[in-house]
Image 1 (cartoon, helix red, strand yellow):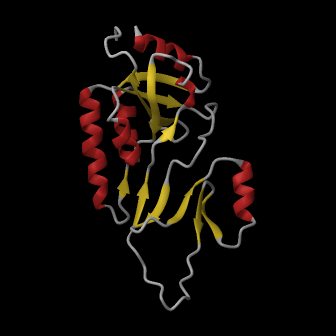
Image 2 (image 1 turned 180 degrees about the vertical axis):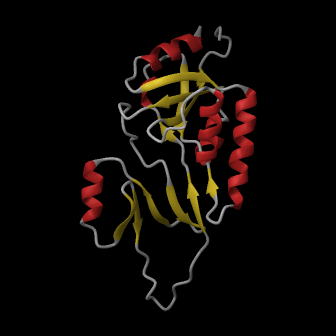
Image 3 (image 1 turned 180 degrees about the horizontal axis):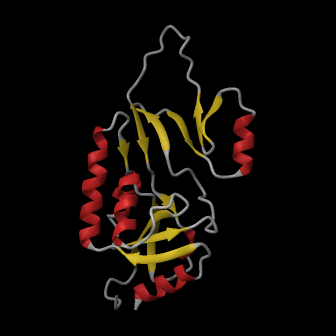
Length: 190
């Protein structure tokens, strides 16, 4: 019953192509995939998925460009001491802001980097990481049956795994989001 209410609320959101409840097999596969990203040249740490998988339920949404833009960055480049070197951007306003910032430059159309002061005699390069953070997902906040609603983007490899499993084309215009939540009443018919 509770999951049906969640699905109904999600179906009302524009830009969602398909909704699937993640199985334990999916979660285990994604944990394995994401843990292997720690050995990349610039490691990818998916803090968002770690947080998502701590909730009672996780759902995968496949979305297109008609879905709303994220309210905050979904990918950061950070140093080992936590300094943000860059992040993804989504809005025209953000892009214009950084185009006029002399300390920022674009790695791609939707990712901005911030220049470090490497001329400083004390500058020492630090290890860098890509971080995929948890992101708010306010579209379910009106439901009185759920709590702790968050979302996250999977890494490219997990995205491919999910698209193949659920019959979604490997089209870069179709994005994957994991939405997770806990139930307020644990005895609610699921």
